[in-house]
Length: 85
Image 1: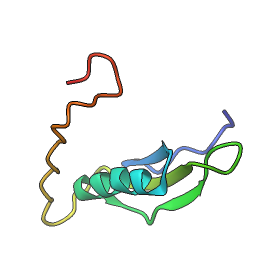
Image 2: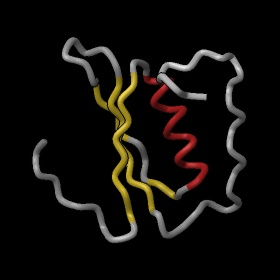
Image 3: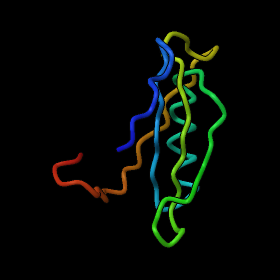
């Protein structure tokens, strides 16, 4: 990886890589429900232009007012990672 400058103290840079823009946006929305963040920036992720890479910076020192509830987890039983419940 290339050397990138560190984010300011109390902030974290987040990179989300997903097969679809919708999946990346869902993860970003969840992060935004827990942290104040910058506007997200998106880029193609795959070598053939498919997929989405989404970048945002979250402020870990502040939470949005009021913090939103966490979304309910799907009970579909389809777990892409071994051992996941």
